[in-house]
Structures are given as C-alpha cells and as structure tokens.
Amino acid sequence: MLSKPFEKPVRVWVGLGFPRQLNTVADAYQFAVEWCGNSPEQKAAICACKAALVEDVDPETARGVFVAFARKKDILMDEGAAPSFLRNPMPNHV
Image 1 (cartoon, one colour):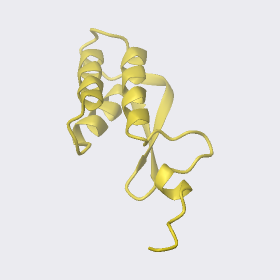
Image 2: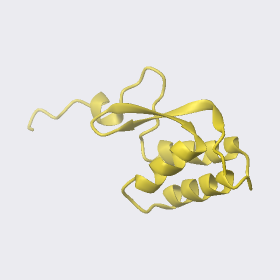
Image 3: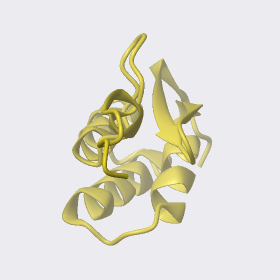
C-alpha cells in the first residue's frame, strides 16, 4: 500500500489563500478526507484515492478525479493565480 508520486503535483489553496502541494495519492487522500464537506466530488476523490492506494487504479486516474474535486470547490491552484476570494475585491458597502 505504498503511495506513488503523481507525475505532476496538485496544488490547492487552503486556509486564507495559502498554497499546499500534494505530491502523492496519500497526500490527496488525506486532504480529501480532512476537507469539510460531503459532496459527491469529495466522495469520488476519496474513493479514487483509496483505489489507487490498493493499486486498483493507477495514481494518475486518482489525480484526475482529485483535480476535478478541487476545481469544483474552487481550490485548485492555477499557475500564477490567486484564489477566487482574493481575486474579487470586497464590495464598497462592506
């Protein structure tokens, strides 16, 4: 049950806009399990990572499912981009 590294790490935004790099299936699994929520995308990411950990699917399949989850939750870090809550300025009335 060794966790092989992803070909390319996944970077996500955590907390108040801090980046976190996930290098392996185990990293992605831990992140998805600890994420607050219970969405279908999160459940799919957890299941895909579990399957990769026991070598039922390859790590890149799990990575793809995890990336879809992160994109849906708007926490996927695109190169040079800030998280959406930092890109959108606060309204003047706040």
